[in-house]
Image 1 (cartoon, one colour):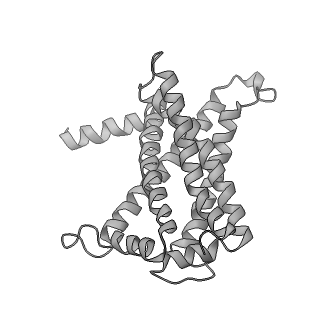
Image 2: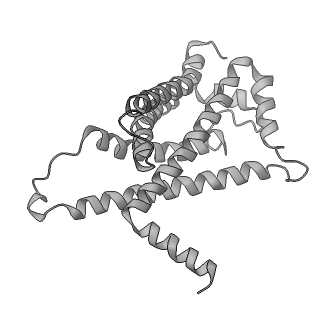
Image 3: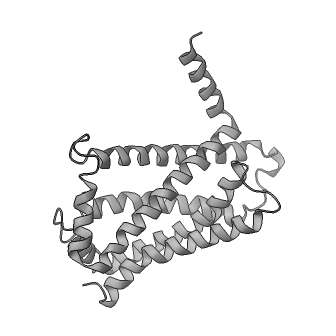
Length: 231
């Protein structure tokens, strides 16, 4: 058996195990968290005016040049993020199915209600999955954007948040994101073995702080457009 074959076999075995799936969820969750922090910071450039955020968007398309081609970095990042989202979602679904299958048959019709955190994570994941599709159509492909000016990020943002239903969709999704991060960060820390009696308080504070910071940061943009701060 070659080294590559052994490695593939080990990874397959890890993937099939419950511990492996939880580890995949934790690692991909942290990858997405890092992306969200960077994405939020980029979004906040809208407060500095059209030139600032439009220039930032143009710069993203040139990262790595001349070694990388135009927009290559963006596509690499998108593919890595897509892989993380798919692996995260598949792991969550399969773990959920295993949890249901492992319950004694006598509790099939009388099983205890899932905890608040678990229900929030499940529904939050569905909401966020649907929102990602909408967000891409709105501000990436501009398919449903009322302005749809390629290269004019500022104008597209103002255009989309000038519609009440876009604001509602975005606000609901960002609240779901906050709950998801709050519970997900703590779960990831447990899975990766970062928590212990001395660190638990600090990890919980970090989870709450990250959730609050990201939710407030993302929501500040539609609120700014709605109130006329950004126009």
